[in-house]
Image 1 (cartoon, rainbow, N blue to C red):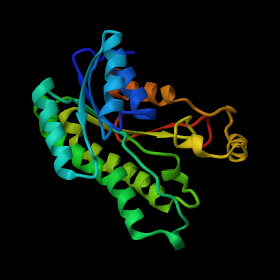
Image 2 (cartoon, rainbow, N blue to C red; image 1 turned 60 degrees about the vertical axis):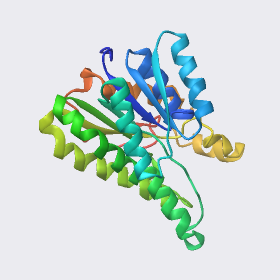
Image 3 (cartoon, rainbow, N blue to C red; image 1 turned 60 degrees about the horizontal axis):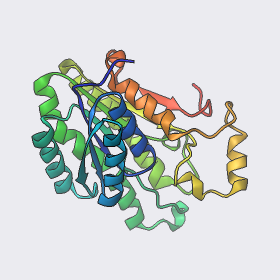
Length: 248
């Protein structure tokens, strides 16, 4: 795979799980990484892990539910690091409930965190990417945005929205050599899936042809591929990383 040396990647939700894995792998492949999340303590730990192996990482405390904070942090990252030419929109939450019982506040919070934050972040990085005529935008969606999930109407809607956003922006910026793609994880070993009961996990695995839960590094490898020059002719694509759970 092509080296990412000379590039600067900004990753939201980089303090744990998939975001952390993406940040570490992007740094391992040579990119300088702007680590963004709400927990500065956790971000510092990720930064120290990256710099301990010779990588480059900077911490930017960020609450993605604040439009102004997103714009301010991205501006600061560009000023401090020279540019942001790889954006990974990973930050996401769940607030599950059956639609009949779902509170409007829980709907709004999930949509704002998972979808609206990506729109604001993309908008904030596009000008600089267009000027340099190179950019990679990668949105982390979910298999549940493709097939739905009981009790996750808000989460599934937000992740489906990310797919539509991905394809629309890909059409708008392709002429400037900016690619926009999505990675759609299936059942991945994270803090979110660790909350599932053993019975539910066993039931889920019955439907995964590869017969195992995915690891965060599986998603990180997909993100790094889409960020590299090896994927220069791929845009508007949803890369499914789900062990074969969803085919077609």
